[in-house]
Amino acid sequence: KLLVLRFSDDLNVTVHLMQGGRLKLEGDKRPNKPAQGLARLIFSDETSLLFTEAGTERKAGLWITQGDPGTKAPLSHLASDATEISEADLAKVLSQKSARIHGVLRDQRIVAGLGRMLANEIIHRAKISPFANSKKLSPHQVSALYQALQASLEHHLLFERTLDNIGKSDERPTLVHNKAQEPCLSCVSDTIRSVEYQRYTIYYCPTCQTNGKILADNTTSKFLK
Image 1 (tube, rainbow, N blue to C red):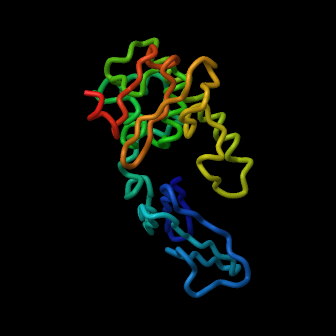
Image 2: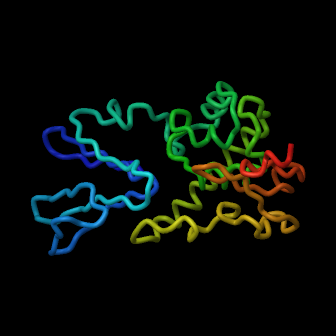
């Protein structure tokens, strides 16, 4: 959800929508104090885009820069985009990071463009535990992960391009994300489980991904020790 608008004089406006940010094309009437408004871009033909953010995270932002936007914040720290990374490059970055694969996929300094939902979907398609260490994945698992990454991106981008506006997370066609306690659509023999954290939730199928093992939920782990 990073958008770059390029203007004359080598001027760029970079918008990071994060979770709650939205860009809305306004009509003829523009309120002076729009609800949740952060910024307004008015073009020479008097059309305008309103930048808003709902929710409580307050992480959406707008940057005005000159020159190559890729060398400046908030783009300068990003790794290769998930739509462009090769299998060999993915294997290389995974081998250099010793951490749980779910967190690694969401690290924009390792692979750019993947969020909470896609991380859940990709790992499930690849039949890998979300707690698996990225550095210890076998060549077969890395290949499965790469194929799952490409398939998930294609599937979800096709859906997103049918929308006139950014939809809600629970309206997206997913296999595991936001499906806790629902039957797994892949194995049809188990139930989707979840591991809760303060800012995100991991969704997985024990049969498909963890050889039947139930991962300790962060909110109840003290009772499972």
